[in-house]
Image (cartoon, rainbow, N blue to C red; front, side, top):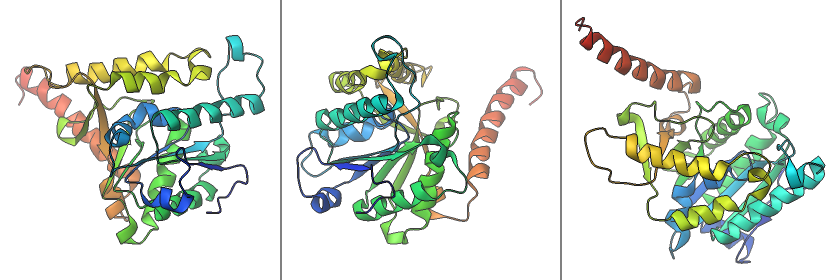
Length: 285
């Protein structure tokens, strides 16, 4: 497979030939940065971890050059940080037993560009080669510009594939904005309870980010725990760790649907739900 960047890497942890490694992928995570997959797509990693028939594939789109750095990493150049982050992501692929790990090595400026098609073209090749059943990516209400660039490229790439090659399910996941605001009927519920040891092992690999001043490992566990506890106010918890997703599948099956309007409709349903409760309590309903 020829990717747009010569520095891009395809890593197969169990050293299977690339073609067969790609053909076995059933769950594919596509994230902007090294560590995004482990934080947002853990449901897919867990589903495939001990399976003989399901395989998780990972795609990291950017090169990691803009990472924050203090302490041991304070004096690292961009090139040194990029090398460390690539090593960390490949280590996570080994620990998580991924079927394949792509590192596309794009600068964030390319990912955020509305006119540069390099990332979209790479993703189209990867999706055509793997043809996963389910794809996990960023949600289009995320507040990180690079994450938005990735999910737009993902959706555009899928829309250009023949329909038979498009995934059956596409879920936008939480990173730089929770999805607890979604109406409950719109939430994709991903129960990841009972695998805290695996999640901790994966999250802890990214020392350059944790030691660099961001406790993503603790924040990720906290979010999942909060989702599980606060999901329902009148029932006992059925899960201890819960990830919320936004179902993006309609944007793939109907390429004419406007992405911004699709997200706007979710926001309007949230607004209606909140205002309706207030109107009832104020005696206006």
